[in-house]
Length: 132
Image (cartoon, rainbow, N blue to C red; front, side, top):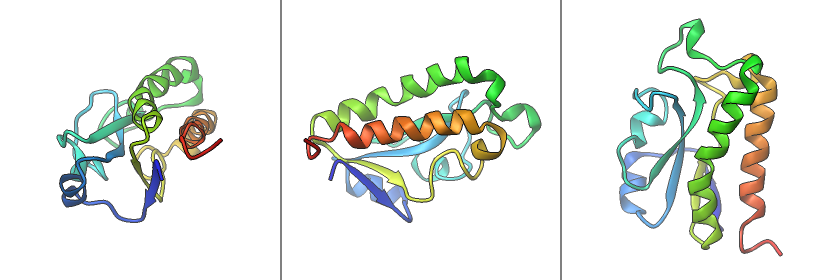
């Protein structure tokens, strides 16, 4: 199962399962310990997918659909590593409650960006060697 969804993810999971890549929502600065980043940031088998500008809840910390052209490139870049991982049959772990929904507020602030993000995640599932 190259894409695995989990309800709860802890740092201890990433440490115990080094053969898996754990995804979490990140920001453009790649800093901060809010949300799942607090559990996974710094682990060699953890990978942040950018979903907002800054590690803050201020208005300028969020992405908006007006920035679609710029931020869609960032999302595509961040999906390269998990894509390579899955292409070789290794497992990528994704939080079941989603990425970009809780602290990044993508569905509310940038629904077009969120739809693009969800499509990238769907493409990741589709390249799985298990899918013909």
